[in-house]
Image 1 (cartoon, rainbow, N blue to C red):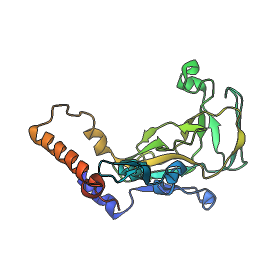
Image 2: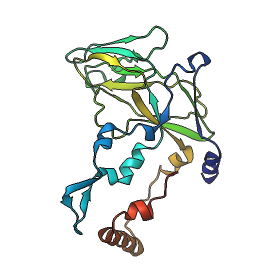
Image 3: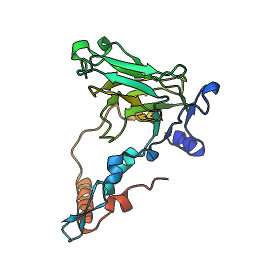
Image 4: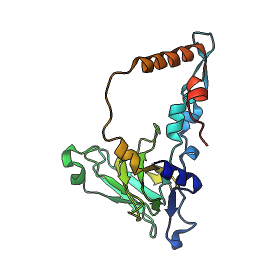
Length: 246
């Protein structure tokens, strides 16, 4: 894994390729750090009406580095063309109007995800068409996830998937569940669909068999040290324990 990581630092481990006739037409994938959800941007970092045990203003989720780090990892793949969507009162009927040249949405059969027991039933599952071909370095796969912490994106949710994109160098589409009834609007090109995170497959092997045990006395003392440090000063994880991101 060390060798894989060292190669990653020398050159990008993931590439996004489009057909020559679509260059400059498709909205490009972008770092997830460029697509922080609006609700998170609106949150103020301090909470003046709340105070900690030292009398300092309380801190909001904006100061929580694990939340921010999760939202800034990987790359956002966007919807690649405008598409008109109209849904019925129960979402049993969903109509999608694609442009003539760049198709954005097709449909799966609801039987593929469980029929009457399917999530979102009776809405038929969507298939967002992705025209970007994703290629990763040897030994690397791509994990596709719904948008992380995008709590205001309620119209649809893409399903997660994991693809060996070092050998499957071909377009990958994204199945999705539609949520919003009585919808009649245009989904705009550039709307974020999924986040793509390249991961080395050595990690997948390493996580198959976890160790479950009680902690040692030394580990317990270390936990107590961290707890006491956090009670005595702010930013222990952010400034002392978290590796700086580059």
